[in-house]
Amino acid sequence: MITQQKNNLLKKSAAIASIATAILLMIFKLVAFLRTDSLAIFSSFIDSATDLLASAISFIAVYFSTKNASTDHRYGYGKSEALSALLQALFVGGSGVFVIIDGLKRLIHPVSVMQTSTGIVIMLLSIFATLLLVLFQTYVANKTNSLAIKADRAHYTVDFLTNSAVIISLLLVHFTGFMYFDVIAALFISVYLLYNAYSLAKEAVEQITDKELSPEIRKNIEDIVRGSKGIHGMHDFRTRNLGDAYYFELHLEIDGSISLLKAHELTEAVEQKISELYPESQILIHQDPYGIHEDRLDHKIEGSCKLD
Image 1: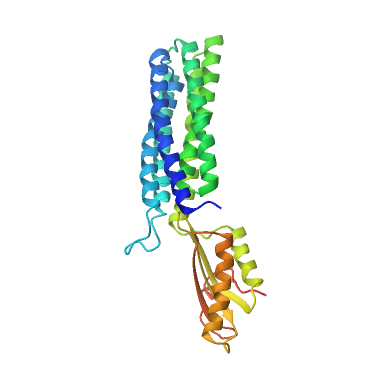
Image 2: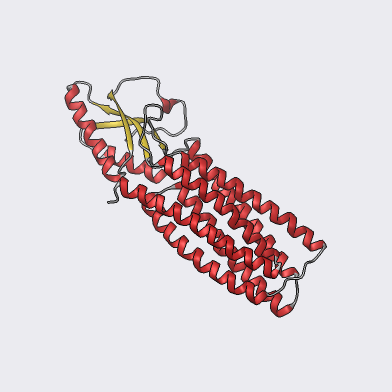
């Protein structure tokens, strides 16, 4: 089982690697653009430039998200990653719009693409560097569930695809001489950038606005409660993603005639099972006597948590 310390180290390593890769890719693509004057390469260069800025923001977010909870941030700083992802989405969307505008201009006033073979070699190097980074980010994202690293990986996954599209367009221009292939590739890249920006923003906003965790996770918690000794039911079950950990809040229904110490022991057993399934999660459980009638959150929203 991965420890929180190793979790934080992996996230920081991935953030640093993304910054280094972004700088390398920018150098590659700038050289390629200056030699070819290809809009597709230029669009990919702009993408890498926004990646560098986004990766820097991601690094800052990871730095804050790995800080311990404090007196003024008692839930921790995990949601800084969601804020980072939202900002990255804005950068990605902006770069997509920029390239679309330039592409439309070149449809009206075509520009010749030169030295396509040089551009192809440079873009192949970019693809190889990007692939190595994406593989490492995928490993880190799977181990840590970091939204900031997932957002960064999304950037470079797009970069991998766009570099591939650029190479295809350069090959087509090289063998056919039809310059519009370059513009078509750039516009395709831009549309994909906009879609990617939407996906990033959607996930970030869901986390910032405390959207409930997946039905699968909620069911896992309900199954734990259902299988726990001495628990007659649960209600007012709420979940949210704190960025670096899950948060679970629920009311357990327990026999009102038992001692407070016994009720505490039953509750601790439930907390232990949840912690084993979701390490590092934060859990808040309130104990209610079984069978009492009260005004509950479940009465105000759809989807009761009461167990059969």
